[in-house]
Every structure is written in structure tokens, then in C-alpha cells.
Length: 287
Image 1 (cartoon, rainbow, N blue to C red):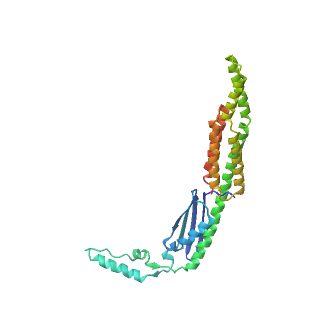
Image 2: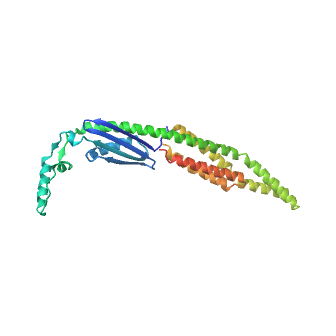
Image 3: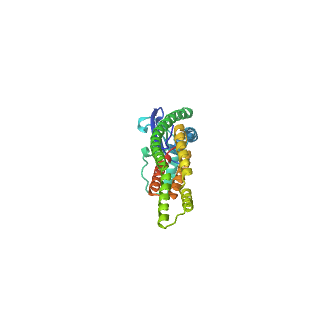
């Protein structure tokens, strides 16, 4: 199975502590980079969340947001933190000494200060179990999304690979024709110059054939095409392998263009490089 590094998944779950929301966004990256955004009171679970994600994901830049939306204070009975209230009162009294006019304290505003009220304390182990279970489901959904995207990328790459193979097949029979054409042209020029030197013609033909010989490059292109097909069929974390093969294929296409002595082979070299670049752009998104 080919996995893309691009995907999205989220889930909301009603718990006795509030609504738990987990959201995952993934884009391509050279390595696995996790960016976690947890509510302050959930940061104690950051290490376990990170380990759980590292166990299931290979590459990609993944943003993870975990939020626990607790019930509004007006709809639940919250215990008052008397120690916090006392500290606030003492601070207000100390500050009032420096001002001639002090506005009355708004009790509702005081209650909204973090730490002043305390909801029923969540059971740490139970909440961690709930987060892990929900995160596991969201990770599975993200992986499935990346699989679907990966299959689309695979189809695009295979289509481009088929076009490259067709171009390689097309260029192979051109070389003997080019050599024969050059031989006829050279013989004609020598005859025009009233020079009849068969040995010189043979030497020129040998040098020309050596200069345009791309059998080795075409053989390597064939091998790379088969290897890309094999890797795609095998699946797994293949992005780096495919990226390396794209570099090798581009090198062979460049050499083909450098040795080209006809407009036909030059055009084929350019088409090969365009197709290889299109494949490489898709491969950048593969895990």
C-alpha cells in the first residue's frame, strides 16, 4: 500500500468531563515532525500522545490538536477555590492602597479567572485511556485518508512511467537509422569532393556511432522503469527510494539529450525530463 503524506482526520467524543475533540492534519515533510497543541490541563498526556503517533506514522509534518471543551459554568455546579479567592482579595486590597478611587469588584469576573472555580476532578487514568482510544481511531482515519491519496498518486506515477517506457521503446530503433543516414550523407559529401576513401568513411562512421551510442543509458532507463514498478507494487515507505530513482532517471535523460544528434532524439530527451519531473513532484508527497 502506497501512503501519501497529505491527509486530514478529526473526531469529537462526549465524555463525562466534556466534549473531547481531536484533529490531525498532515502534509509532506522530509522526516516525521509532530506539532502538538493540547489544552493546558491536557499537557500531562503530551508524551504518551507523541509516542502513540510516532508508532503509527512514518513521515510527514503532522499537526495534532486535542481540546476538551468543558461544560459552561452556568450549567454546572463548580467548587470554589477558596485559597485562590483569598489570594486575589489580598492582591486587590494591596493594590487599592495606591489608588484614590477603586471600582467595585465584579464577582462574576472574578469567577471567570482560571483556577478560581474547580470542576469535578477528572480521573487521570480514565481520561488518558479515553484520549488514547480516541486518538487511535483518528490516527486510523488519517492513515486511511493517506492511503486513498497514495493510491491516486500511484496511478499518476504509473501513467507517467508508461509514457516514459513508450519513449524509450520509440528511441531504440532510431539509432541504426541515424547511423545509416549519417553514412549516406558522409559518402555523398566525399564523392562530391572526388575522394573515394572507404577506410576514411568507416573510421568516421565508427566515431559517429561511438558519439551517439546511448545503449547503456537506455538499458539503465529500462532497469529504473522496472524498479519503480516493483517498488510501487511492493508498497510501504518508499518515498525516499523513488526520489533517488528519479534522480538517476533524470541523469540518463540528460545524457541522452547531450548525445543527441537529431531533433527527434532531442525532443524525446525533453519529453523524458518533463515526465520524470512530473513523477518527482508526485513522489514528494509519498511517505
